[in-house]
Image 1 (tube, rainbow, N blue to C red):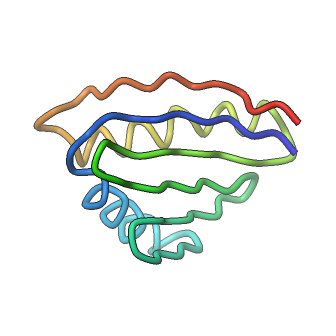
Image 2: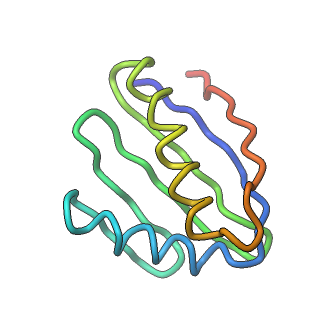
Length: 97
């Protein structure tokens, strides 16, 4: 499995995670529990966990290329909901192991 991660600073992380799960629930399988949302895309799974400092994002899938493509999809959608403070800063890094 390939996993790429980012921590995004925002004071409204919980709000954005809930909005994203609601938005994607019309087309994809989503799960929201507390401040953690999971979205199952056809080729990968995105997990977003919010706290007071921001959102921790992890995208995991079989294909490194598919996972990398989803970084833009996830970031663009978060930025849409965070339009008052967008664009946010995303520093993606691959998880080894």
